Image (cartoon, rainbow, N blue to C red):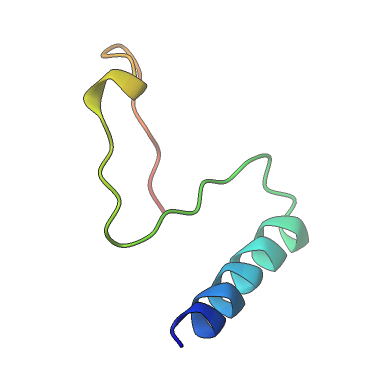
Length: 48
């Protein structure tokens, strides 16, 4: 039953993005694995 708390957490993040007029966001699970090919080497991903 971890799906409900996870969904509520995501909803909270969505609300933060909208409330603060954030242009875009990316919400990932804690076990995500990102392939290096997704982000070109001449760019960097922001954190926050």
